[in-house]
Structure formats: C-alpha cells, structure tokens
Image (cartoon, rainbow, N blue to C red; front, side):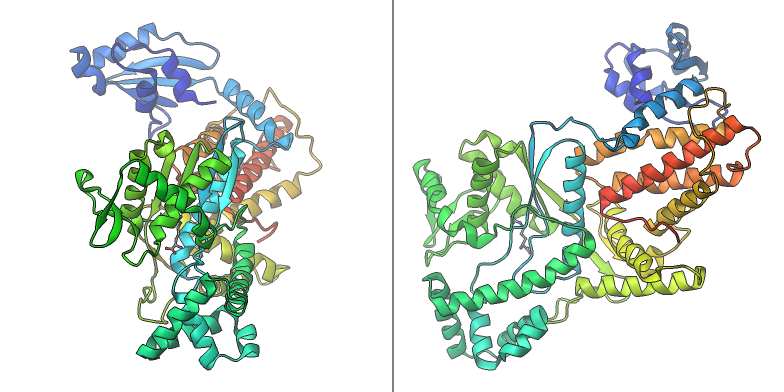
Length: 563
Ligand code: ARG
C-alpha cells in the first residue's frame, strides 16, 4: 500500500491537493520520531500561519485508525506512526501476488493500452559499440516494466539498414573481400572492409560505390544478395549479444522497410502546404519554433534518416494504434526528435503528443574513453567479455569452492554491465569502471545478487520450518524497516514506467538489499527466540529474495543461486 497517499487522504489543507500533501510526506531520518512525517513549512505562506500551529491543528484533526495509529505534532512537523502489525499483514496480502505467480508489483493498469518502444536500433555492418549499451538495456528494461504493468508492448529494432554505405561496402568487398574470411570474421570483417574503403577510396571507387548503392535500390539480384548477407552476418552477431543481455524484439522493421511508405506521408505534407523548397531541397520550415528546417527530400530527391522516421511514425500509429511511442535514443538526437514531433503536430495529428524521446547520456570507459577515430571503437561485446572475465577472478578470490563458476560469472559480469547503465538517472553521462561495477560492497548489481544468495542460504537452513502467517510475532524495528522497503516495490515499478526511468528500480534494489543486510546482521533468523519470530523472519527473507529477484529481472539481470 502507498502509505503516503493513505495519510494524505485524511489531511485537508486548503488550496493544496492530496497529491501535493502525499508528495511532501517523508520518512524521518530517525525512526524514533515517527514512521512518516509531514513538514508544515510549505503551507505557512499559503495559510498565513506559523508552521507549528499548522502541525498542531492537523494533528488534532487527524483520524487515527487501524493503519495509522497516531499523528503527533513536533514543532513544524506532523509525525505519524503506523500500526506495524497492520502494515505487515497488508504487505503479506499484497505480496501474495508473488506466491500466486503473477509477480509482486505487477498490475493491469496498462490493460488495453499499447506502448511502442524503439530501442537498440543497430546499424547493419557497423560496430555494435558501447554507445549502444544504454539504448539496448534501457529499452529492454522499459519493455519488461510496461509488460509487467499490463501494457501491450511492441519492441522495435529500427535497423539502420539503408544508406550509401552499403554501396561502399559492396565495392570494398568486391575489391578486397574473401568470402570465407568474411563469413568467418562476420561483422568485424565487414567493418574492416568498410573502414578500409573510407581510408583508401579514390574518386573512381566512390563513383562505383554510388552505382552499387543504386543497384541495391533498383533490385539488382547480386547487390541485394550481398546486402542481405552483410545484414545476416550483423544480425547473427548482435543476436548473440542480445541473448546474453536477455533482450528481445517484436519487430526488426528498419529504415529500408519505410522506403516505399514515405510517399503518402510526403504527399500529406504537400497537401497541408507544409513542404517548401529551400536550396533545391524539400523542407518543413520550423523557424517559428526556433528550429532549423526539417529536411524531407534532398536536392537530388533522396530521402533522409528523418524522412524514414516520419514514415515510421505514421506506420506505427496505423499498425499498432499506440498510446505511447517511445524512442530510446541518445540526447545527441534531441533536435531530430523535437523536429520530428513538431512536424507531426503541424500535420494536425493529435497523437503527436504521445511521442516521447527517452533521451539518455553517454557511456564511456574509465580506462580509455570511446574514441571516435576511424575503426577505433569500443565494442560492446569486448566490454561484456572483460567484465565477465573480471567477475570470474573476483568470484575465484571470494569463494574458490563455488560451483558453476562460469555460469555465475556470466550472470554477475553481464549484470554489472547492465546495472552500470541503469543505476543512474538516464540522462547523466556515465563513466563505467569494471572495479566499481564489480564491488561486492558497492551500489552494484553484485551486491544485490550477493544479498539474494545470502537470503537463499538462510532459507536453506529454515526450509523445514512452517512459514505460515504468525499474527503474534512482534514486529521490531528491523522487520518494520524491511517491510516498508519491500512494500515500496510496486510504487518503484510504477514510477519507473511513468518517468521512463528504470534507475528507480535499480535504486530500490540496492536500498532494499541494504535494509535486508541490516536486518540480517541484527536479527537471528534461523535461531530466532520464538517460533513465531522465526516464521516471520523467514517469511520476510523469502519475500526479500523474491522481490529482489523480480527487481533485477525487470532490469534484465539474472540471480545466481549461490555466490
Ligand atoms: N540507428 C540510429 C543510430 O545508431 C538510431 C535509430 C533510433 N531510432 C529511430 N527511430 N530514429 O543513431
């Protein structure tokens, strides 16, 4: 239950909404003061009254009940105490969802609504590099989170599979390529060819590349067969990484898919009088909105990335009738999406307001920032491999007797890479450090995974104990803190969806693991004094394991049974 909202429901402050009151309620740093507190300074100006007077008056009026047992004024604060038994009962009631298999914190709030999510969107024949990490894991996390809340979700990999570079690639392959080597080297071999072309191309070769691109376009069999081959090599390669990151898609409709779907949209722009000529190009003028023109067709008549995105937006609306269409793309493309959404709005489409650019910051490596020099990029696969390798070393050191070390290292290493990209507010630039990401005592996925393993090993010890409801067990401070933390999960999931911010769940995982570990250190579980207490604590341990596992799984991170 959302206790802040519950309390706010019973507080009337003139001119302030219940939601605002709920927002103002906080958890006091010292539990001795209360379980929740409402600072009344905020209302002083509005009510022309001293904050401590306000607190006093509100305290007198507050109707204590079976859930909130008291409301007391202390200076400018109004402190609330919850009935801990009621809270525990309420938590276990909600948590029953988990035992029923639906998933604690899942809901049907999204029933009947569709969310399209465009993420990862790799470029064929180009490196799948660390710059693709965030879009891939953020998008996939949002995908799972929205599904968990009952939405119909469409995951779209908007492949970068159109452009003159494919003409260059064909030229390079014909000049230097060896079939077997390329087959074997896959995306790296293709990329090498492409890089070599850019380094060595003469005028003549450039012309030939343009011709090759034209051949793809005009349906030439050989050129298309080569293109499809390059594409399949790329997809085979990225597919393996997607598997490791637990990322899936419902559609791989990329830029090429929209080539024959642009004309109706261009016609619509024309009919609405939005298309104007500028230096030979066809553009939508956005000067009034403080933006450069949105170029629809180049002076040679060629379409652009933006044109294909415009066609894709209409296609998605028509095909999926989405309630929201998200684009998980780096902030470097802020302007592109602002322009795109504005153009759709100018076309009179009401759904323009449902388009969301979920922008995120840059990821770089602590030991060597991503270089933009030709051919010098940090491949995502190398980062994952290295992290798994390091995870193996750390595990070896911590627990040499551990079984299935490779499997555990894969979960820990991959988890650390994912968590590294999801733990911070998404818009922040991130410097990824292997050592920090693999710190057992840090704000890391390993820490959370380790806490899960700790829960599992406690549960192993109490597996023969009956864990049924024990209404008589006293709820002490540590149990209460844990229940409150666990009880926050449904709200964390909701907030993550609402703000397109999986970091809310990542933080919840770390915070809750910390609370559990305090509980674990201070309270005997298997050896608790009474059977009631043992049952309660065991139940809480089981709930912690299940909830943390849920939290991590929404982020795409697995939990080893032992660590
Ligand atoms: N392939 C593009 C890139 O690497 C990202 C595409 C994002 N999606 C979109 N619909 N524009 O920059």
